[in-house]
Image (cartoon, rainbow, N blue to C red):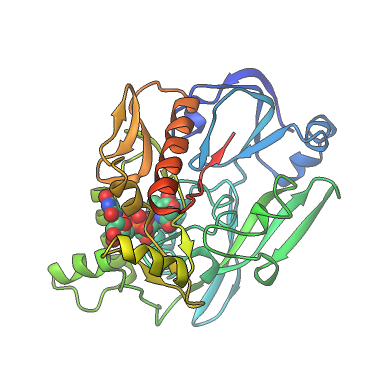
Length: 340
Ligand code: EPU
């Protein structure tokens, strides 16, 4: 059963640390809780929000409905052979703690995703990715409660429509289903070591680590992240606020006429990804701070709350950045963070 409390602050439930209230707040402990008629009536009225680690959300106002904190726990090995294991995780598990648990058991696949704030259930929604690895590469399937159909569904990887920071949960299933478990396939031997991401490769080279283990990769990722990204426990933020924009070769060539050097990555379909951090820096927003909000000095892609700034102030900063980048580069940045 879910107990709902009235008019609760969400400050501790979002990594931006924005102090807004939820009309009702409750915790999901078991998937079956979602079928409880008292809860279901809010779900079917579409007045609900499920929150995991709260690390990809910017609240700009109070939430006039039910906020459900997903606390469904559990780690269960559901298939196992000499080379791989499949683990079904409760959606409420903390992401980084599951990474550490996998490392302890020598299960490979999550090491590059060390220290990403957030929960297991949120990971597939935006297909989390960092340092050369993406969730989709280890994803098997998930279980979710489909609100309109009032039943639990399984969604296999082939149905997830995974893309860069995107999945079916950002499209046709948006606000329609609540993820309860996530199953990942992890290696037990011959781990697929991914060490070519530039900052990772440099870190390992400097330390003379030529054949890194999954533990080495995790330590390197943790060190690189800590050197570039703010710890949300110390400074309110939600990681990258924007996605890295993807443009056509034609547009890239036009830009090259005005800007001789543009950092970029060529994607398999030949379109071109530009680091949003570079665009933000070049429009003068690096090291920006006003009152208690700004861009993080070491990584301007991250917007930060230095104190008790409001969600609206941060949203307005994001809009001003989008406008500057559009004006200077004719590129439309898109928020990665959900703005509510
Ligand atoms: N850059 C600048 N100025 C800066 C910082 C970076 O110009 O101050 C440029 C440089 O050209 C640099 C490039 O941006 O080479 C890329 O920077 P970085 O390696 O830090 O990665 P990113 O593209 O900015 C992405 C993810 C991060 C992820 C890192 C590492 C997105 C939106 N962000 O950032 O994800 O940790 O790669 O893989 O794809 C997140 O999603 O919350 C997140 C932190």
